[in-house]
Image (cartoon, rainbow, N blue to C red; front, side, top):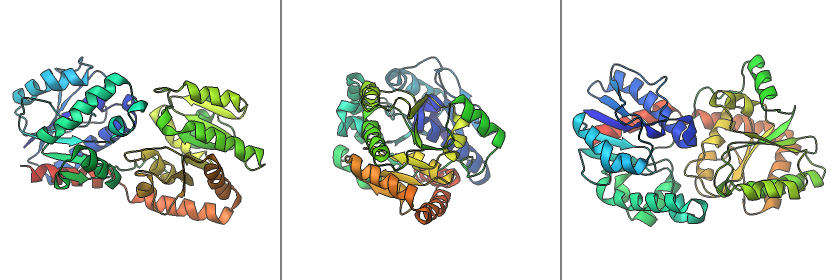
Length: 377
């Protein structure tokens, strides 16, 4: 059985999708070598594919399309040619575009990470919305199996794409083992200096865009300080700028938080564990997530979490986080204040978070994915 993988998004530049694709492929190669010797993998690289650490006697790196940036062109014209040339039996698409739109070769698996272009079209560019929406609807004809990272995302797929629930497998993402409560003090000191981190801080990690709800977070943080709670804690916002981010910085200035909020910009993947470890509290008031991997990363790092009560986030957090209404800055501020004021609650959340994060491993994700491939043979 030959498994084709579109490696275009296997890259830190692709955010959470890139991280999940990298960890899944690496774990699948390792697990398949031990338990599915009949499976061979072919990864079709793109311009930003990170193949370092992805290797094995059961894996071929196909670079024939490495210069093709456009997902649409790759899946319309190039990937189908590669599938035939490599005699692929099952193709797995990780990108939002998913699988080839026409000229089907073998069986197709598509991971649908979220339904943002359909649910929140104002949060994406017009071009992205049109391309992804067309690809979503094509999944009904082309995909033999769809993978969703959460039950919430599966429900959205069923509701909006009308795909039979039996064709959708829920396989939650895993949490990388490098996220731990303890780390190298020297590396942490270097990270602290690199990103100008204060001694104590609240933390947000994610792309700066409307969906992440940073404007509400800034208002909640300003309320917290105005009430004299957490006045010794700065807010660190870690992540690159995305779509429609200007209002975030305007709010930041309007609230007079120039000396209290630190925007780090993009944080290198190797620096993320120490960034989490140094935080007193992780706050993630996102309005919508297909999964919400930063929640688990913070928990695995021994940091209590306040997050939204919407979409997949309660499903990921379980009873290990404080859930708040992300539309209400007062509710977000109160959630933060509770954790900061009640040490017993804080310690209980840390222990619950560590236990919760341990339930999500990439080895389990790989095993479930390989079983899915095998069922399509």
